[in-house]
Length: 119
Image (tube, rainbow, N blue to C red; front, side, top):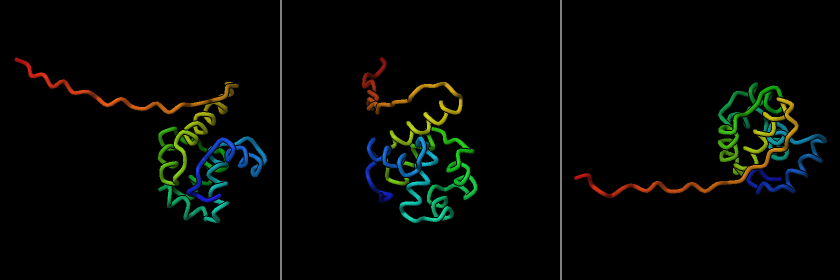
């Protein structure tokens, strides 16, 4: 898997097979880094975080906010929706809520400016 490849549901299932456990954002980041043979130092530099923080994320000791997950996806060239979903699923699982997270991209509406001038 290339770091620039498309992220699909099938790809996520393949990564689960590789890691041998339920996929988390940390495990996905590890799989991407490992597949492209990138060191933690270089990968953490790419994400603009410390090596220790990356290590903590990869090992499930730290969570990633949905906003940061979207940023990481953009940096790495992956689907923001999948990274955000995994981030949210990690948070839900940590709380033991027993639900599965699905997300849908919502297109933003352009703001309409009122062109009328007050008299």
